[in-house]
Image 1 (cartoon, helix red, strand yellow):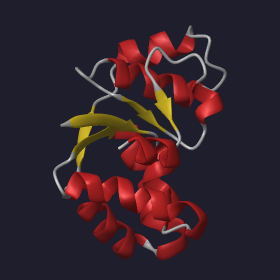
Image 2 (tube, rainbow, N blue to C red):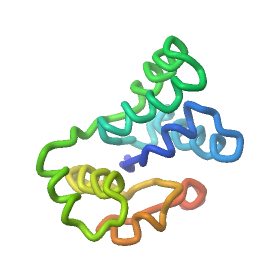
Image 3 (cartoon, rainbow, N blue to C red):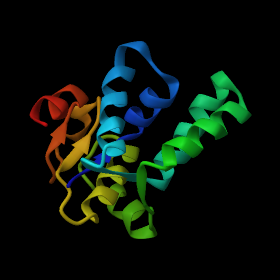
Image 4 (cartoon, rainbow, N blue to C red):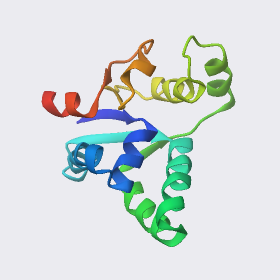
Length: 137
């Protein structure tokens, strides 16, 4: 089974059903639902996703959507060492550096899926746009 780490934007695309991006996010989660892929993200990505979507759909609906999302995700906790290494990394965006640090701790990860591939140009892992990873699989 292939394992991928999802950046926060993929989670938001999926739960917010963003018309332009939501289709690919849905296909990614469908791979997990079918047992073809194992999806990972950080604990911070989950809380950030909740914060963003609850502003537009309300707390109750956001919690219900998040409960469904968590069925298909494995969570990598952020630890102090991740926050510190991200501070000194060459990544321009701190949050992306933290995500990358978390992803590095997951064994046999195929790569990171994000819409912001340029922000992960320095990644030690392969980085895929949603459409790219779906084309390969």
